Amino acid sequence: MADRAALKRKLKGGEVVVGPFCIVPSLAMVEAAGRAGMDFLIIDTEHGPIDISKAEDMCRAADAVGIAPIVRVGENHPWLILRALDIGAAGVQIPQINDLASGKAAVSSAKYAPIGDRGLSIFTRAGDYGLLGARHTQKLNEDQMVIVHIEGTRGVKNLDEILTVDGIDVIFLGPYDLSQSLGIPGQVEDPRVEEMMRGAAKKAKAAGVAVGSYAKDVAMAKRLIGMGVQYLSILVDATIYMYACRDIVQQVRKK
Image 1 (cartoon, rainbow, N blue to C red):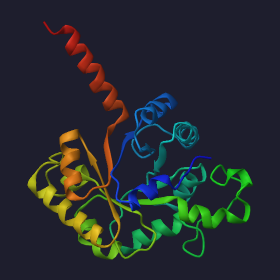
Image 2 (cartoon, rainbow, N blue to C red; image 1 turned 45 degrees about the horizontal axis):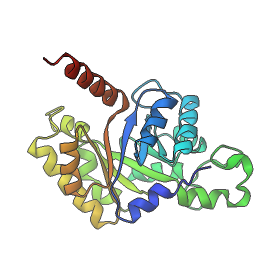
Image 3 (tube, helix red, strand yellow; image 1 turned 30 degrees about the vertical axis):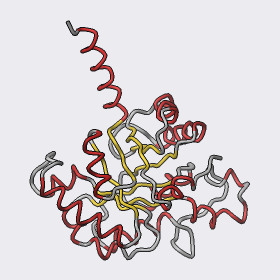
């Protein structure tokens, strides 16, 4: 099994890590992202057709090329979080964390006792099918990451209390969801969105929690890094491919 804790160490060391969202159920796309030098990828089971079986195969492909697989679940539900981590993901990304209770529930579902109440089977891919033995719970509690999505004004308003929850590794600020909650859907570069994100990032950094977000292009990525974002997701695999194809077509047809 690949080193699951590598991404967490990079973040704790202050590095900026970069990776795309993946909505295409393709092992080749995963391998390509790893070969390109991406640090992680987010296997998105919320938006898109990826099921848990394909997500597990994508984790295998990620391990083979040294890129950390993060699984985004569709809901803050114990069973979904359990399965995402049991297939060997380096971490789980959980949507709609809006208050203290939802933050605590996310960590509880992702961590074994005494931190949480994640159901235990040591005979999963995450436990090397039993080879971790007695080290299983402690090692996975230490290695696997919990990334929580702050997707609306309510989550931002309650961020101080969410940040008190032990076990959260990354606060992920979703610019598109935040723009929608402000009544300006899709306007992710609006000053109101950026002001909200900048304030939230400052609070997270002060609490010692890494900040994540999504960029639609490199220019936006640079601005986010300037706000303190370390866990930087940029574009979606299908969109990256579409942009590359479009650029080829435009260059070939250019007079």
